Image (cartoon, rainbow, N blue to C red; front, side):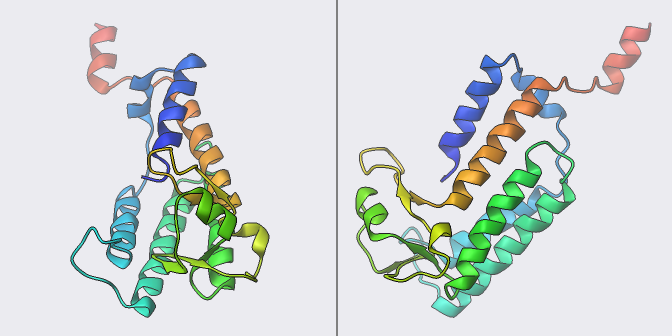
Amino acid sequence: MVFLNVGILGLLLGKLLGGELRNLAGTRIRTTWLVFAAVGLQFAAFPSGALPWSTPTGVAKALWLVSYGMLITMIVRNRTLPGAAIVGAGLACNLVAILANGGLMPVRRSALLASGGHYHVHNNSIQLVHAHLAFLVDRWAVPAWVPLSNVFSIGDVVIAVGLLVSLVAAMRTPSQPSLETATSAAV
C-alpha cells in the first residue's frame, strides 16, 4: 500500500508521455511470486492489528530480513528491466539502515508526528534519538491528512523513482505481438 500512490502517478505519467496501458502486459517480469511472498512475510511479521496475533520481535525481524532477500533476488533476476537497478539501490539503502539499527527502521520524531503517528516501537519502525546512518532512516512524512499517510526514507524515494521509471518505460515499449496476431497478419 505504501507505493500505491507512486503506481498511480507512474501510470498517469506513462500515459502523458505517450505510453499505453496495454504495453504493460508485454513486460516480462521474472519470479513475480517473490514479491507476493515477501509482502506476505512482512504482513505476517507485522500484522498491525489487522490480524489476531502479534509476532515476537525476533521472529518479525527475521521474517522482514528474509522478505528483503526475496525482493533483492527478484530485482537481480530482472536487472535488465528499466528502473530495476534504481529499485535495487533503494532496497539496499533501506536494508543498510535496518541492519545498522538492530533490525528495525528508525524514524525521526518530527516525521512520525507529521504523519499522525505516535509510538516508540511499531511494526518495523523504532523511534531512536541517535540512529546509526541517520541520513538513511525514515525522515520525511506524508502528512496525516493524506489517506495512508506514513513516514519514508531516502531509500523509499529511490524505490519510488525506480518504479516510476519502470512503469513509464514499460508503457512506452510496444508489447510484442502474440503468435496468433503475427500469424493472422501474415495471411
